[in-house]
Length: 237
Image 1 (cartoon, one colour):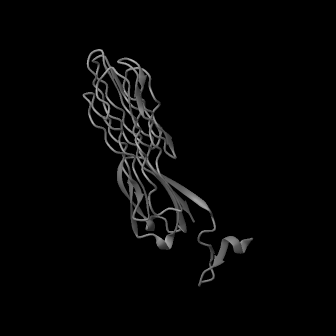
Image 2 (cartoon, helix red, strand yellow):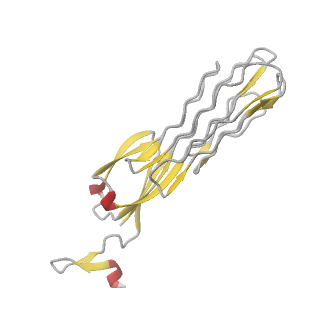
Image 3 (spheres, helix red, strand yellow):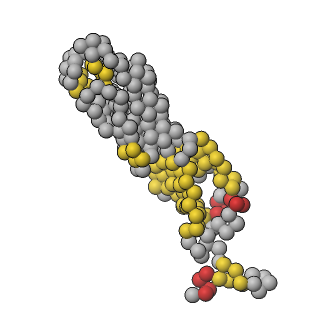
């Protein structure tokens, strides 16, 4: 048992075997933007398990004319990736990027923003979710718009997942229909579909797409922002 965890160095001192202690610390990054991971800060480090969740796409705003309506599709969910990396494969410093959630479209039929990519240096990348579009024009007759296709798998991981596609939208009349739900992510849920006029519903967790907004009878409504991403670094030593 002792040989599993301890060894003697060149001076005969008893030392821990690198990597024998298992999980020792977990670092979590949720603020959009970049931060550096410096290997020398953890001299005992043997390997890291990195999990990256990209940001979800936002949904567009809507502004319908009197006695008419607009029903928006949701934004797509962000992608996800995982990779176990030995300390020898790490650079002295690796840049961690946390993808922001896509911005909500303004009420006057404003376009929404795409979700941002999340990454760990050049070793692991997950792709952000595309924004929901502004394809439906104001009107009172039945029509549909397709949902937003989710992003494909990222790169670098032993697990690379694309994001979930969002729900499409349906207008039945000038006051009835269904706004699209946001796409799900591995670590979050998209905003729920809505059947009444209002701002798109919020996603939950990390990386879900914003739910589609609904405008009816001249009352403009904003879209919904996508869920922000997250990067988790588990330190083993």
